[in-house]
Length: 376
Image 1 (cartoon, helix red, strand yellow):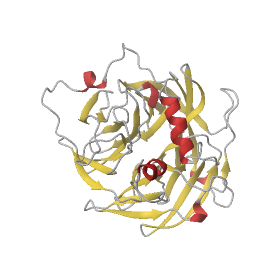
Image 2 (cartoon, one colour):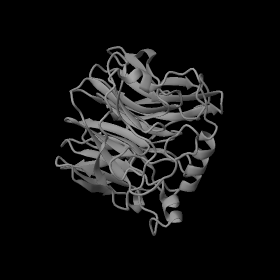
Image 3 (cartoon, rainbow, N blue to C red):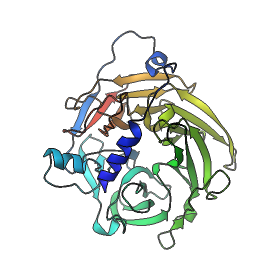
């Protein structure tokens, strides 16, 4: 199942090409010639985590993160673990202690694939945690899951929506759930169509899960499709990370373009415009807004880098390093970053796709979370 994921992704990404005239994020980042302080090690994760993916903050300001454990096959083959790990959700508490918040149970698994692939997650206005279950390569039907929460603890999982292709990131604004769908349609090397769906919480029911209709073309698609994006087709991966600022502007990372698109809405939640907001990264991944610093924070999966993006769209490099195993806190194919207080927490997804412009070359142990101290 997960072999299909890794194999299909590797084939796609080996065809990657980046224009020689593109502007690099380093050129855009800063005029400060002083070397950046390295990221620090927050935690080496136990064997039941092997691909930490996405972050959110819960109602108690704990950091929650998914680990779909996509490196199961690779780690078993390398002899690093004895058996595949069940997907989990981890928690970083106020003292930066990491524990397992939830381990997915047999009844949570998608019936056809027999697994769950938890990617993006976000706390809803009801206090529950909503998760994108990305089943595209697992052989099942992708779903939106709701982890029901009582007094900060997970008490059960419900399926509240089905039928998306590649649900990736999840973000809430008000009572509306937004989900990036990374691949609606793609023609390798020419273009990728991706999008963001918008659903009101009143439509999400365990008793009657919302069924999305498949995307056919620009004219034939589900009514909940809120925005679409066309990117260069080099990866076959478009809309990825997703977040909102305090004004309700939506920011969508377009992975294969190395860019971020800003989408504005009117007071009724109708789309007004989508414009290029930031560019110059190689292949950006997860993104989060921090209201205290009034900035976006984003990872570049391919370039082993983390950036702050200010409201004028300028990039500031926060951390970057070469190919390592991350044992000392270095970035190791970072998948997402989130800010809590004066710290930026980074999930080291540790993907390796064999692309010539990807820094990371192999998934390996240890599996880590890094932290960057913010001096603002």
